Each structure stands twice: as structure tokens, then as C-alpha cells.
Image (tube, one colour):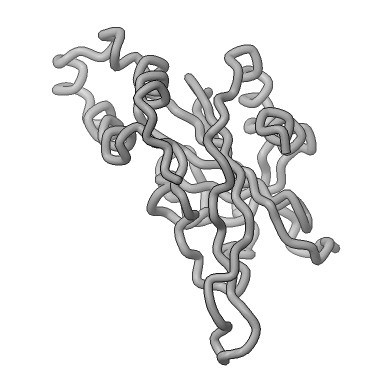
Length: 207
């Protein structure tokens, strides 16, 4: 069910400085990035995680399997939220047999405690291109998405809780397939992250 509570929307906007007057009209007039970032929260009625991750088009809905060519340089989150996604059968395979999978949110977004933001940020600093050849387990799901909020801009960091623990970025969690991020500071492709990143996200959501 979409997250539409007034308290969640207010919390995000308050953390972003919108309700405290930290961004004034002159800022918006002189800095195009401020204007552009305002729409990402308001466009989704204060929600931070989509009900379903954007469709990737491959059998398991992972998105690209190509390693990233460089490490991202993600901004330090001002606030952050975590959502869990489970694999769901969305129809037959391309040849009419088997199944294809999508990723549907389980439960509501969990806010990252402010005391943990610095640790999360340090883990994000350790993201690096995934090895091209590696042995991975063949299990499936769930996936965790950390949504970093900077101003009113949302960046999703999707971490697989299976296989090699691949990490993919989305610079618009409601529209851009994880692994296809292209805005400044993000990178397309598959990344590898530290084990403590997934452990932290699991602890925050209780899964």
C-alpha cells in the first residue's frame, strides 16, 4: 500500500529544510538544482519508496548485470529511509514458459535513526565497481532500498539480500530502474558494497 501518511510526508519535508525555511525564494531563483530537486518529493505526495520497483525487463527484474566503471560520489544523506522488496511473479517468461519477476514493497518505509546516518554515509563511501567474474549463490530476494534524502532529492541504493549482494543505484526511485542512474554523483551498473551496509538496512527494517 502506498505510503501517504501526513506524518511521513511532514518528516521528510522537515528533514529537507522545507518546513523550516532553510531554502528561500532567492535560493530557488539562483540555483537551478534547488528548483529541480523540489519536485521529487512533492511529485510523489511525500512518499519515498514506490510500491513496485521500476520494471527492469529481464527475467528476474534485477536490471543490468554489467559492473559499474567507476565508484559513485554520493552526497551525505540529510535523512534516509529503508524499504524492503520481495520477488513477485508478474507473468510468464518471454517464451511463454516459466515466470518473470518484479519487486513489490513489503510493509512501510522505516526511517534511519539520525544517530546511524554517519555510519550509513561511510558505507556508501565504500561502494565500488563489482568484480566482473565472481561466484554467487542462486537464491532470490528480498532486496533492500535505502532512500537518501538531500534537500528534496531522492536517491535509491538497492542492495540484493542474496547472490553476491549486488548494489544498484537509482536517481529517481519511482521511475529509474536500479542500475541505470545517470545524475551527477551516481553511476550506472553494478556495485559492490561493504557487508555492514546490508546488515544495517536489515537491522533498521527488522528483516
